[in-house]
Image 1 (tube, one colour):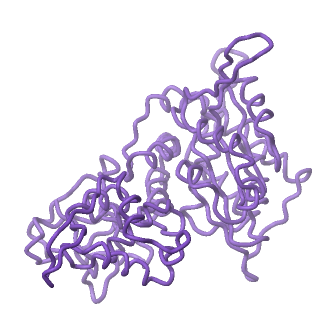
Image 2: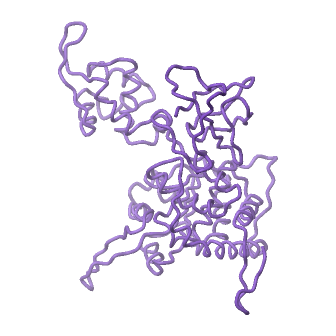
Length: 449
């Protein structure tokens, strides 16, 4: 950091953004063990993004979860409180209190930090906190106020909801919150992993100094951040969620643009967790498995295959398990309808054809993004390159032409042509498949141009 005098009395700190983010990361990692570098980068960038709320169209949530107690969730939330902009930390907030906290300063809202979120949204609470969940969902995007009727003044009130929010708890948050969040999965510290004890009175002043520098640096880049449109390796809501963090990284420079996009790939997955999807999407997933290679199946056969899976809910669904009638009803809203057909044994019965499911399988339950289309290039420096004249990645007839694979390992760019030796953690930044080598050859499917 250097200091220069601009107009006599005003002194301005010229801070290197990458160096400042490095300092924030080092401070956090001295008090808590994070699972990996992707998590560390995401947490630092999320903290920095809280200082630039006026620049964002979306306010990404940060979900800090763990399978058990003593995994560092609350300690990480303490450090976020010390470094983020205008924090409000609570373990039990009513929706009205949160509305009022945001509404008092809608142009400069606080950062909501909710600890023990599993006691608010856990299975034992039922629908008791749906108002708070609705607030957190609406507040993810700018311009989504809550509407309330004030009976005493007989007028309609528009209450601001847009604000950054972090939630920490055991287990999963509601899926509508997870869908709008950067998700950090903590784990218990191993005996050989050593951190410093955090004491607010002793350690707080140093973190307060970092916070001041961070706020000043981010504030000096608000115009740049507001106009930023970073290219991302994800789409749709995931892109909305990660855009502010990657914009911060691009403004900071250094290794942060690469690290940020690696974190996007490392912490975002297109795999479908069948335990955390709606029942009807679970049905689509299981129908795909039940069909196997078949082009058509009678309803009775499809139901029998679904109910044969002991880990699926279909044999115990309702009073008598899944029936052909219930199956038809659950698939109806997807535009999938059974029809009477003649089968190989000469019988006539209602059934389904694979082609009826294809569109819904593609839209609601993809396995990997790479199975549909290549991931968009993430930066100008990561543009597609031909390796004509070099050993191809795959000689399969379906390959149009091989391309260089960009490794998502932080600070590295490896290729699938055998010239680099990435670690086992490397993934292709385009097709998102592992980059692993055996005697200099790749062992994963190639990207195609």
